[in-house]
Length: 492
Image (tube, rainbow, N blue to C red; front, side):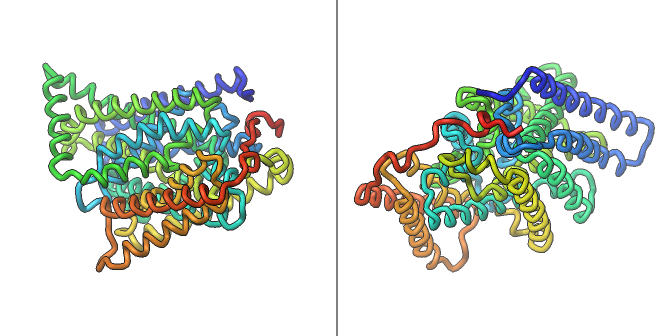
């Protein structure tokens, strides 16, 4: 049962029209100011500033008064907007992977992981009625030790993800729009607060959809300008794609690293949020398909637009302003994903969710909002005092997820696995991680860290399966709740 009415759908379309109209108006205003001789610094800063105003309006307008909206967007996200949100976060991951690695980033693994997340993992989480990846783990492994352990590893991975997205967005403002580091950090932090704290998952989905749509419109405009300036745009597009693939393969990662990246991204919480806000598992998979198509289209448009934009970047403050806006929007989407996951690290046991959600609704929402405030403050602090650490944060987040979270998700698929098996799996991962990392003179970075995490994850899954086989738990004790409390429960 869905709580989405025709009026809700009309409001959704209204938000989309508002965002598109705002972007077109901003683009025209920036171009006009540049033509009449406004200072270059003002023109370059206007792109991100107007994007901030648009996102702030969307975030505050998506305020969620009830838990059904705050925790699960009332299962009302249309696939089109879910696909835009998915594409924005995937692009944010790609930006962070490329920026935080000293060696070749595992791009083939990234592509495979995005596809697995879109078509397999995220729809599976929606099928089990989760509102966060932590809900699935808390429901299948409700014992206190395993819940505390999973809460800790999810929070650690989520905060590192938020740090990576925050750093990506901040560096985009500093490099492209000539913001100072302090001003960029303040603007990014304020944007995250306004788009997350009022609406929770509802605010995240609509803000990410606006971010994805804005970035896509910008690269599309750039591609159209490139086409208009070239009599035959297809050969330049083919050359750009070939050059990009050749650059990636020239410093490619190993097969183990590619596999590790694919599994880490597929099992991460970052790409699951659009599916968790969908009306059904079918619509969740549809949103993933649309998101993948948007990613492909965006890559093609960027491959066509980037040479054109780079050629005019030195002479055109308009190009720099739009490039800053297009780069920092996906970074914001990645940071929002991490912050909300950190605030929701302690999941709900869905078997008793009705009783839990009926009472103390305002207290739970207030606690999550306070956690979001603390997460934003911690992210700003760490990014400011350790800017170099933030560059590799995305690899640390993926490694934690691959070693600890992904094996737990895999164990949830076997009915005989209980909390004891999950705890033993985590213990195995810790032992193997210590044994593997202890001999290293320097802590592995980038893709090498993912390869080490893969070994720990395989050991965890093997240990958990062996424990479940030796000490099985009757299926009825781990049966999932069949009803969806986030769309069925009348909390309004």
